[in-house]
Length: 209
Length: 208
Picture 1 (tube, one colour):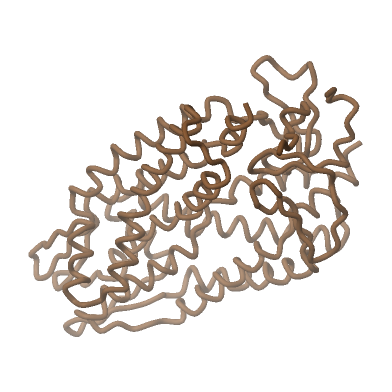
Picture 2: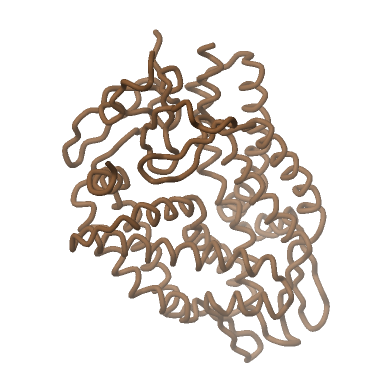
């Protein structure tokens, strides 16, 4: 077959197995699955811009308390000490565990924060029709962070360390934990609601050719 | 049943924005393509995908050995240090009868990294030789491996939290052991290894 006469807008390929199909018209809430490997090729999410915009706005409000408020504290022999997410990083740096400090900072603070701000910015531009060509680059860069946000793993880490502490010490839970859980929920919902296919399609119609 | 693929039709899918690009004759010699939609550079298939996966995987396996031998955490109480490795930490939970927590940590820090390393070796071998290759089964297996990857960071986060929270001077404090660095490296290396693997190679091999 000769590649040059194919209209690529009428075709869709599976990201996982490269199978090629004619592109179906999707209504909101519909998705197409590859018949060969079964993975979802494209999905049109319901009200994606609206939902993602509001979830990421909620996430941005929760971000500061989740990072700065103490998550939990311990009391032992009359002494009390507590730590927030940021304290974790500072203590790790003070004790000289630089690599761990950098990675915990990246996976549990920097990447989730940048992803949240990114999805807020992109949905804000879509909601108020302020599309600009730079969004093409912006949204591509956004995709590089897809695999590296680990808030959910950190949450499980909090639960496990509570079990480690509960036997020998008096454990107290602080407001930071609530803020962190809500932050986790809203940033997860913001990225679940985001519909990259729709955003790319719209940006292409606007700025390419 | 034969399904047409993008590669057979001289098309290439952008991994970031999922736009189909036509392969033009002026794409550079190493096959680098610039996406017409997002302007990102990519290849039709990740070049040397199997070699990269193998190399990162070996590195992960090597880092996994000291990660289990050295202590991951040292608990000081009244000035006396009590080091524990990943396995002895799990043992403590079993002794206390907290089986669910022991199972979660055992899965996240031992089973998942090992399963990822062995699984990727098997996938690379199958994709390279094509022996008993079942692309549908194997690509599903690959996605499970890819999904499980980040959960191995669990132990690192637990140690980071404990070091920060339990800081009561002479009475009790927690220090991280050298294993934490090796263990983190294992997790990062397996994640990069899984990212370097191109599941489309499994299907390509079957169709040859």
